Structure formats: C-alpha cells, structure tokens
Amino acid sequence: MQRAQQTHLSDQVARIIFLACAIFLVLIIISVFYFVGSKAFLVFFERGGTTFKEFFTSTHWDPTAGNSDTPQYGALGLIVGSVIITFVSVIIATPLAWGMALFMVEVTPSWLSRILQPLIEIFTGMPSVILGFLGLVILVPFLGKITNTNGYGYAAAIIVLVVMILPTITSISIDSLRAVPHSVREASLALGSTRWQMMRSALIPAAASGLATAVVLGMARAIGETLAVAMVLGGDSIPAKLFSLQSFFIPTTNITRAILFDFGETSGVSQDAYWTLAFLLLVISFIFICISRYLASRSVYR
Image 1 (cartoon, rainbow, N blue to C red):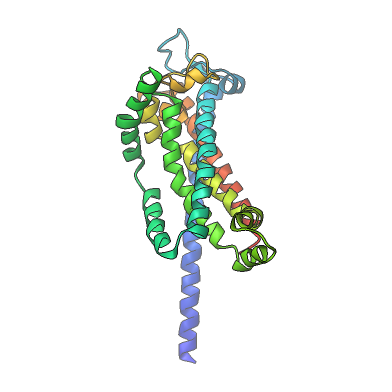
Image 2: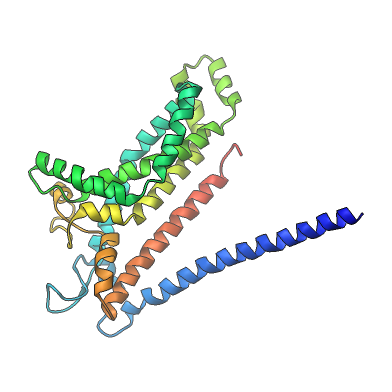
C-alpha cells in the first residue's frame, strides 16, 4: 500500500514538472514573438518611417540613406531574394533527397544502410559556417571561372542551401518510408508490380504526408539560414534586373544577409526596419512549422 502511494506521488511530481516545463517553453515562444513583434511595427508608425505599401511593394532598400537623400524602406527585393533562394534550392534538393531515401530504404543492403544512415545524420548537424566557408573558397571561384563573373550571387547561395537541406529532407524521408507497413509493399508486389512500380504507385503515396513534411522542414531551414548564404551572396544591394538569369551571378543580398551585416550599424527608425524583417522571417518559419505539423497529423500510418 505504501509503495503504491509513493509511486502515485512520484507520478504526480513528474506530471507537475513536465507541465511546468511545457508552460515555460510556451511562455518563451510567446515572449519571443511579443518582443520582436513589438519592435517590428514601429517603423510604420514613427516619424521618418514608411508605410505597409512601400515596405512590401518597393525594391529600394536604404534605411540609412547611404545612397540617397532620404531613407528607403522597400523590402520587396530582399523578400524576393530569400524566396528565390529557398524555393529553387528546395526544388533541386527534393528529388535528390527522395531518391536517396528510396535507395536507402528499398535498394541498399542492411549493412550499407547502417553505414550511410549515421553519415547522413552527422552531415545534418554540420555547422553552417563550414559549408559557407567551403562555398566561399571553392564554389564561388569555380562559378566565377565558368560564368566569367566574380561567382557571388543567388546561384552560389542556392547550391550551398541544396547541400545544407539535402541531409535534413533525406533523413526525414527515410523515416517516413520506413514507417509504411511491409504489407503495403507485399500487396503491391503480389499484384504483379515491379519494384519500381511498387515504390511509385504504393510506397510513395502511402508516405506522401511524411515526405511533404520533410520538404516543408527543409524550406523552414532554408528560409532562415544566415551565415552560409551571406558568405556567398557577396553584395549589399539587389540586382537592377531582379527577375533575370543574369541576377543569379551578380553579388546581391537577401533578408538574412541584410540583418546580419547592417543591423548593428543602425539605430532609431532604421533599426526598426530590420526588426520588421526579423519578425517577417519568424512568422514565415512559424507558418512552415504549422504546415509540417498539419501534414504529419494527416499521416495514414502512425
């Protein structure tokens, strides 16, 4: 009887501790949103600031008036730059990651899979500064040589991001494919499907929600990546022809690079504009996480 009471008491204490930890984490997240959000909207209401329309529709970004007579707060170019880098890198990385995941789950022998899986997981946690440095000293000169430019720009940033998010998408995709019951594979093969037909028509559709979650989480990492991307973009302003192929091989900037290099050099309303960019990134990342949780909740096999 006494032992049962002690077990019940320990369960209650553990429940209270876990609840307190959960509440603490929620409060931290809310505090971050409140702190950044409280500064993000000041640029729209303070004297010398800007309007919502100019901020989201203009491409003239010069908060310190270093290149003009008056400050310019048009962030559209920075936003488009981040969107271009993120979506192109995800489009390139997704088929590669899914192909690698299918190879790991359905083709490789178990001994090779046991070797490759830890390597992928280790590569997932590689510091971004290392990849950025490799991109700076190897990729940028290579691109400059083959394109007759200095090598900086969206193209270099996209390649670096592909390398960064590829292990993340691959690792989650492997877990999603392995979560599909073997009965699905066996049923498809029993109907006369080849291995490729089984993967294409049965396995991939069954793991679709998990594969989509992997892509969304890859996008969430890509949109917020700062140091590695900033090292290979190499510019302080957006190209004049933003939507041309030439802009991929011209030194440029995006949201994260602008915040990294310029935030500490500003003050007042100019600094508030960078808080707005930070809040925009925070909201985008939060939306991606919500989408990934929604997709995971729709999984057929749990």
